[in-house]
Image (cartoon, rainbow, N blue to C red):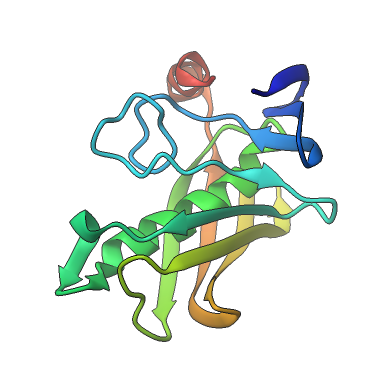
Length: 163
C-alpha cells in the first residue's frame, strides 16, 4: 500500500517498498492511464530524477493487430501518453497538437515495453517532446510530439478530470 505524502504540480509523491516515487496524475477515464476505464491499459507514469517520465507495460493479447503482435495504435497511444505526462508533471494541462511515430520492430504479447518521455523545448504554450519505447533494451519505437497548453473552458474541463 502506498501513502501519499504530498502533491507537487501534477505529480504525487509517495513511499513504497522501493523508496520515494513521484507518480504523475491521471485522468480517470483515459484509455491509457485511467483507473476507471474498463477497456484501458491502466498504465502508471513516474517522474525520474532527470525529469523524464517513465512507465512499463506488459502487452496483453486483447491489444494485438496481427496474431501475437501489438497493434501499432496501442504503441502510439503509449508514446503519446508518456510524452504528455512529461508536460503534465509540471502542472501544465495540455493537449496533443501533432505527433510522429516511428515503428522500429514488432512487439509481441507478454513482452514488457519500457517507455520514457521528456520535454525537449518549450516556447510559450507550445511544448516539444520525445518518447522512446524499448523491449529487452532495444528500441522498438520512437516518437516526437507537439503539445499545446490548454486555456479557458478546455483547461477547466481537463482540471476537473485530474486525479
